[in-house]
Every structure is written in C-alpha cells, then in structure tokens.
Image (cartoon, rainbow, N blue to C red; front, side):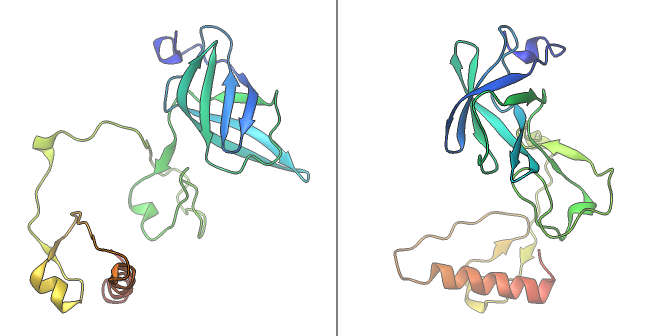
Length: 187
C-alpha cells in the first residue's frame, strides 16, 4: 500500500544504501511513498545542519524506495532518518518570483523572497486542459534581424535550435540572451 491510498499514514523511513546522489530508503510496511514524492533528511557537515530534499524515483520492493537527492549527500549515513512530506517537490509561483533565480527545489539563489506567503505548486502536476489555453500570435523581437525575418519567435512559445558542431549555436544563444536582457529587461 502506498501513502496516497492512506494519506494519514506518513511514517518516517531510514537510509539503507547510498550511491552518490542515489539513495535507497526503507519505510515500515504499508507506508511506502509514491513515485515523485518529496522526502527530506537532515545531514550535519562540520556542525552545520542541512536539509537534503530528494524525490522518489522508484519503488524497489521490500518496503524500499530509490530516491534521487537534489543536494550533495556529503555527511549522509546509513540509518539517517528520512521524513516523508506526503507531497511532491514544490516551487514558488506568481508575481513575487519574477526576476529571481531558483534552484531545482524552489529556493531563491539571488535573494530571499520578500513575500513569505507566496503560493507554491508541485513540479509534477496535470497540464491545463487544452481548451482553456489562449493561443497568442504575438511575435517576440529578438533584436537579431535574420532571426526576426526568417524564423520569428512567438511570444510564450518554444523553438528548437539544431546544428552540427562548430556552427555557432552557443554564440547565437548567448547573443539572444544578451539582447533580450538589454532590450526587454529579461523575458
């Protein structure tokens, strides 16, 4: 039985194996977390406690799950207690996050968020229904004339850049980043 079938059954586990960023965690019978569930473990390195967030990638049997950690596992030992959060990894969303840089677990890397009550969404969620999406046909000017003329980018859209080695993909991307940052103040 997994935790989602019985959400009140959030029991702690313990680390049983460590192989770099991949960690095996054992839970009591009947309280196995589902795939994509966030787990937390506290690691002490040089007297500083750090919470290592991980995500369940696989249920491997015998009441064990295999997780991928989102931070270094230095100081992690077998037997370390693991807390089941009962939800996936969440990241902040909304106007408060504009202009900030975040790591994979939603922690700001540049400066703390000013709004402590910012809304958070799970990173694994159902996409919006197709009929609720509003298509845009607004061209996003990159400032590079040949791109704007031959392959214009749609605002909010996605585009792929393919090419062989040494043809200038990286130079083009760096130039686009520079122009978008200077002309538009970011995206």
